[in-house]
Image (tube, rainbow, N blue to C red; front, side, top):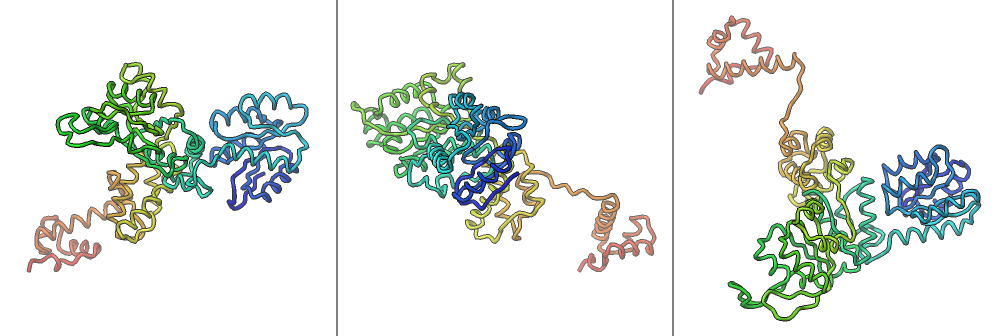
Length: 455
């Protein structure tokens, strides 16, 4: 059994094999403004979770096949930030109590009071989605640049919103082009620091000799070329968030100085004698394996644990293919406005090509492909040919034998007419055909020899 309503509030997934109770729960929660999906087995619940992540799971303990506790164990592994409430009869109370020690939010015993159920759900949702800043309100404005319907992304974003309300340092893992800075900006927007500066720096893009000055600043005369005082990025981000992108590429000597800043909460500009207090939240990102870097002595272990209080992983675009049509359309709408083009969508075969491409460059590559296709498109729908061109995929049209033969025949006749300036007798001689037969070939292919004659 399943039911759903138009989205008005948080989505709830409820699981119970009692059809009457399931119907009653659905009606009660629907009336309370929730979007309800109801299923009668743990297996069906896992299928729903793979398609769409709800805000909360409400499950009976005793279910046919896989029981509610086994369902919880799988959910805790795959969706650690998803709150779970168990419904239990008196005989399974000990199991439910044990489950709370493993991470279940709470349990309710049957029969339960309707008001108590609604209060418990509201409390669980409030705990799972704290409001850290005005930017993190109900309209999800904080994550508006992270376009997705993927359950993998939904789980990661739920964790990101939870950690955004805290001051914990976050280390974002992901391949190049997956959108690590976009996620960092979203965390900042959902945090209590949203009204303060967000400053990002790529640690691998600045020469080692300049990176210390860029981060911590310098005073006049600190080194050759230091013609005045320079405020570093830590001071520029005071009260807000500093993102250290590609932190794995930071040289070891600077890692030591960064660790000291994080421990002491103050920076000393290059050449200065006094330190300056700074209040900065650190978000860092890398595409490197920092565990391997630590084992090789290329990254400090003490710094790693300072930065990696919470770890978030951005999946490759190929791991979230259901998001490709959404992202492509999102990019196309913005780019069409930017370029003043009347392009509003993709041809079906073009969309299929986008959905099946390899995407080694991830979301950044998708944006580039859509931008190129938009810039060159002359029709309301982007055709397959432009997508293939942007993907650098050779366009291959599969023809039947008869179609290929006719195409070759026409191209061959055209080349002969060009070569002979439209002289049929000369063209027929080259083709080793008599003039009558050659005229029939021209007629069949709709070719007028007069068009090929020189002026």
